[in-house]
Length: 577
Image (tube, rainbow, N blue to C red; front, top):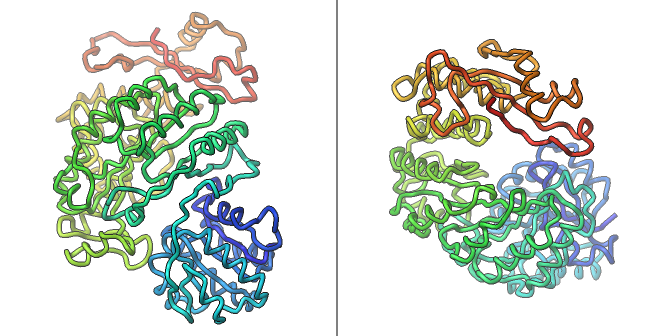
């Protein structure tokens, strides 16, 4: 059992905490497992369950890796540890603790110290001190000399130099036992040169890079282990063209056909060489997260972001569809009222993101946004996640309205289950107008106040299709909803609203014409047949409405691995007959 335990409380089971792993290994966890180690739990576990796990290890020192999304439960756990292990000394580190160290020491009498800033060398000094002083006296003069520590007795001892040689960091995953179930986080650089007022990364402008050959070696370890997803945590990945394209090229040259790599990029800074390179990236290799945040130039300037939205728009549109792109917007920024936010929303939707994350401004300790918000009339939550409640431009009621828009975006866009329907409505009605109308309907018919199964929104939109009659042909809209439902759901039982125009003989003929019937039970089980009054597979289905004409479609669904051991015929498709 390690005497010094670095404790992570992750957002969910499949996450890994790179901080506790990297720091523990940096401090010699493999050579000295009795001295230092790490443990991981999740915020979905009870305080009692996490407490039991920590107590079972009988540590003499516990240091928590702290973020805005886990600090609440950590604050509940800390005083309970003192009751079970009264001699145990308890610390916090991480971005949430670093910039509010004195506040947490004042809030929680059971907390003994806070590690501020990068934790590797401070924790190593902590280990050295512990080995010299087995009682680990946090009131001793020697403890008070450790750089980067904020303690109850000594306050803050001056900070330490940043870790400049990232090659000194060990690979954080010596064992990758759950390659299919875990998300593995990886950093190839630290720091960010940009000055986004709301972001903690803007506080560290000294960018440092892991040596490129070391990055290649680490990527190869992920590929050899056949992990499912690797997320680069570099705050802005595409800073140095030769470097970032070189990493992409290595991934492409050595890809194993399975591992997905995730990057956070600034799209307006993608070079011509980078965009040209991306054209040759196949599906299921890379995915991008792109912070747009706003399309209002005045807003972007106020928070220290580039206002070159035209270049961003052009570059995002040139990213090939083989790369899954996730675009972010932030509600609650300066000069962004509901009308301006709607324009930003439509700006992003014109880029057809694979997913849109509608976030809400968090006023974080230590950021420029904290001072700006205090001076200019923002109101935000006093405790994590410090989310904005109102601004001079958005009332609380409007913030809540945008929360409902977020729900509708997740249901109708991010789910990926309404592709044909949303393409049609976006073209005829406009996306912002549609989502606002959907929220108004949802509120009128209490959709937000009841439990919802995954098929709920199909029925909701079908039943209220006439509400969109000013912008869309109701027949076309309902036929596209039917198509999206059957395309997304292999349903043994269809809901009451769904008119399943099924014909057994038509289904049989379709299977015989497209691949033949190899296994009667499985071929029918993993396919379906329906008829439509429009052609949902064309770009403008509204132009295909013709009295008496119907379009017959065979749906083929992916098979479960046990029903398809040879891997053949395992792609979802729709065939117009």
